[in-house]
Amino acid sequence: MNRPHIICHMTLSIDGKVTGDFLSKPECKSATESYYQINRDYHADAFACGRVTMEESFTHGYHPDLSGFADVVIHREDYIADKDSGFFAVAFDRHGRLGWQTAKITDDDPGYDNAHIVEVLCEDASDAYLAYLKSIGVSYIFAGKEELNLSLVLDKLYQLFGIKKLLLEGGSIINGAFERENVIDELSLVVAPIIAGANAKPLFYESEIQNYTLTETQLLPDSVIWLHYLKN
Image (tube, rainbow, N blue to C red; front, side, top):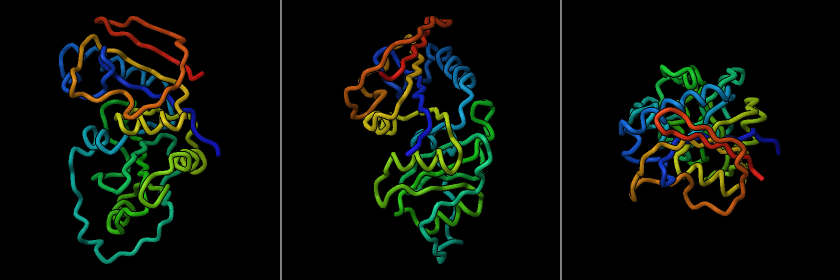
């Protein structure tokens, strides 16, 4: 199977956390700005996030009205609404929960704006939800009945959408799934000068031992550090 080249690009605290209240602190603002600039500089074909991250950043808890699709029956076949977009937002949303309202991301940051949305689903997503996605032009692919086959996901992203370079941008659970499959080719870590605390989540959830080589470090404004690693 072919797959995209995958770069895990994240902002994290000194203690290795990627979610938590620290991200909204003034001390993290410069790190966040650097993170977005590096995102833009990569010129990736797509970025990928888990359901929680997509909801927090883009759908903001919206719940679409699915009542008009109650009697629709949808075969479990991939739906490709726009394979030629050239820029994609890949949402790992196993059971179909995200409330998209349009087929493309609308964001002030050009590193995210106008990305065509691709939902990654299991076959147990509801017919009504699939019909809703079709009605607004959101693409979706299947990769398992109740749990995702990540290798199949990556092969489909490569073959169906031509995604060659993918930025993996969390959260902790989806990052961990990629790490355990040993498919992360690079790490791009923007370290904020702040401790997150015990309740924040780590870079990788349930990770396994993997080896990387540090290839570059940069001291950025306001004591922010960028670390770049390549997979051994």
